Image (cartoon, rainbow, N blue to C red; front, side, top):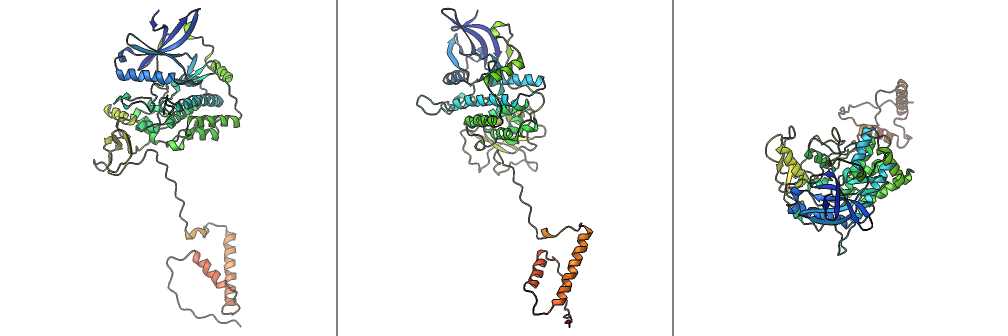
Length: 488
């Protein structure tokens, strides 16, 4: 049996673009035995110091996190140039597999199960965000890869967050991000992550909101023809409420999801703990039951009894990079893509360049332009502007492009007109007759009182006020009239 350090390799579990996952066994005295998952960097990448540095940093960061909703890292090692680390084995499935399974059955995950899973994942994220270094200063850690494939649900009802391979801490140097490499999954990025601007914990709140939406609806939220259009939808398109795709979702849960997916970080929940609290308060008010046993019962009902993999043969499988789904996502790219300032090495710029290289722009006509002269935004890298070519000429506009999250313009109130009090001509005949009779009475009174000193005060004023409401735009010239004869 192959050994890697002190671990015996039982079988291969999955292979990804950067590393492979191996089921391994650690043994000791008195028949001690414990199964773990070993993550080993791929041999063809072992010579790349950048990948090795990022791989070891993932292990170091994950090993420093101790929380019931985060997969624990036990050991880090190296053998014959192969770097690896061992982490706890979770007997269960990831959210990607759960979404696939309910899709096969034409079902939806119960709302209380969804809220329980996402609340637990939010608790794990909050613990990572609050992590401090040896100097007791916050690390500023951001996961950057929250997606259905990185949230595990055990058959025992436990929920674990995994894979801090893209996690970024404040202490990480800029050199660890390789220029020209698109990191992360395009459909699971925040708007600020797409633009390449500095991130904080609110970016993870947004991506966890995507996972929440997809678990509720069993549909992809952001998925387009290519990564550039997918990220453009994230940056510029509005997200419909999940209740538009699932009728049993109440308004309160709609509001929680849409607040997590707000384009502007300041409009979101300011921490994963706030999102967790909102979900738990909603469950309490809606009288929804949740417990590890209920989640475990749901998992067994969905997947059946699954023995541990060391008890049954299993062929290695390729790890997909995103939630499998047919068709496009719920949110479509905007019909007209707005100009957007991004960093030159941002995922949005890299995806844009790749789409252009592959000639995937047919009607878009997007081009990369230099930043406008009046751009004053603070960025830590060279900036570019993603914009559409002008339909009138080839010269780029010098007007600064609009910001990414443009609040929809409020509809102005209708103008108040002086004719608002005039009734429509389409009125009941009795009303017309009544109005004519009233007019005759007014005329008769006018003739009866004309020229009398005891005319009621304000009578003429009332006539003037009434006629002033709807002035005639084209008044006829006044004609001299004889005074009416005095009644005797």
